Amino acid sequence: MSKRNLNNLFFLLGVVAVVVMLLTFDVSFVELWHHLCHAGYWLIPIIGVWFLVYGLNALAWQATIEGNIGGKAPLSFWRIYRLTITGYALNYATPVGGLGGEPYRIMELSKDIDSQRATSSVILYAMMHFFAHFWFWFVSIFIYLALAAIGDLPMTTAIAVTLAVIVLFCLLAFYLFSKGYSHGLVKYVLRIVANIPGLKRWTQRLQSRHAEAIENIDRQIASLHGQDKKAFYKSLFYEFMSRVVQSSEVLFMLLLFGIDNGGGLYGLAITYLHSILIVAFTTLFANLIGFLPMQLGVQEGGFVLSIAALGLSAALGIFVSIICRVREIIWIVVGIALMKIKD
Image (cartoon, rainbow, N blue to C red):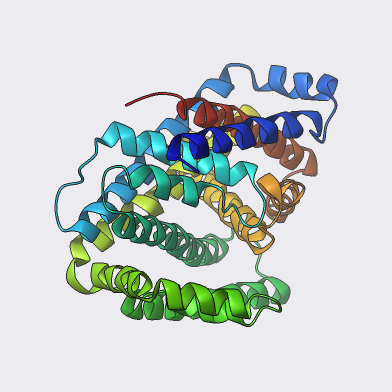
């Protein structure tokens, strides 16, 4: 199948996914309209902040590409930015942990660099995306501890045990990522896939037919951290900051409800830290059960639980989850539409 036909197939899948999401939205249109009217002009910064979030994601991917090829990226930042938005749109719209965007990114990036480096660059960025997630969750634990120390948040035995488990979970992930960055990831993943019933022979054929390509991709993955640490940490910084900026949308919604912890610089700072914790817990919850399209039901539950844990009302959690769902659909439509824009 030609790349043009594959592009059309991805576009069709995206359109179908958006239609299904709209038809299966988990609130009535009357209730949805009520929430949108409540949000009012706050919808502008809530949706607009993602221009910056995706910009940081694009900068992280650009740093990864340049570190991988050992020079300036042979494609414009606008093209990287466009592929970033479209890739995430496909990820949001597809099941199995959001695997729709990576094949599309590889296909499009291979127009500018060779297919092996395109594959390794996309894999490296996907690894960095998840690696930054763990750092965000890890740092959020210490934010919670700091807020608990000043009496702003509760600290019970159950909470302490939960935080300890999350810390251990993150430390284990850091160890596994260090192995992946040191030795590559493709062969390791293929070994895991080979243990799935019915896939052993397919995996063996894939490895025998593409042994050299797999070896090259793994070597390129390992070389980024080993040879170009500047590009590695630049990419990690941009990805981490994208989550910090993402928390602004929750901040806007808290302020919409008059929740500002007394106002002033101190009150806004505390409210922003609360927003970071809400996003951290919700994304952790959603990624643990990430095989559902747009994490249907999971994201909503994560928002309600995380907001309730901070002593806020469940109704606020429902409002935040609905507005975030609307924002996701809008950006999915934008991402799918960008597939038809020529550079």
